[in-house]
Length: 306
Ligand code: CP
Ligand code: NVA
Image (cartoon, rainbow, N blue to C red):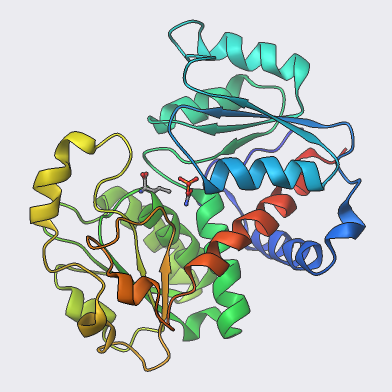
């Protein structure tokens, strides 16, 4: 049966460990995997812009001996030019896997339901699983600690990236302290769903409306844009609502001395993060971005290799 990657919540601990060990091998010795997906094609349906996700999946396929085809908003027009069902069924006759970046999470679920080939969530308004996997892989590389010794503070919008971090933290036993302004905390249903697993793994997921409290003694400070793709009309209001939630030197000083700063990128410099922090010695944002490539190659091998 084909496997998809829709949400971290669907993965077992073993699945995640397998992806990480494969990513480690691939990163160390990429040439050994050069022909692993020879003759395979990946369709990239992107209804939103992308740098990292689009480029790393395309380059990843190329490096594995396969091919990637970009289908932008003009081409497929899911549900407008053609139903999701008909797109899924048609593409399944041509390609070996589909990456979908879209708005409604329901669209990813429907694509996975109808496609006969693996579907990978390349970001929806609900989650960004490939990002969270690369993030934790990066944390492991940098800290090498057992998960329940790691405290991550996420400061910003309780958005898609935050949701996937919640799911992965709960699954692995990592501690997550989230600070968002009132009205922007992650949805209760997400925290509730993750809490069941968090109880078993010993992870604590805590919510704050004060960033100072969240970053206190943190090993990692993570942030994302205040205005996600599709929310551009709210940008001005959000800039004002998120005042005080910027990652700057002052906030950094409350965390552990060797705190790592992470951002999924793209960054709105001067809003959620200052230049001096993102370019400073604590920042690992480009190592994090690089690992999107290695981790996604591992995901591609695990889903597409026959
Ligand atoms: N982090 C991330 O997914 O970046 P892109 O939007 O550029 O793909
Ligand atoms: N939350 C951001 C993440 C971009 C990678 C967005 O959805 O625009």
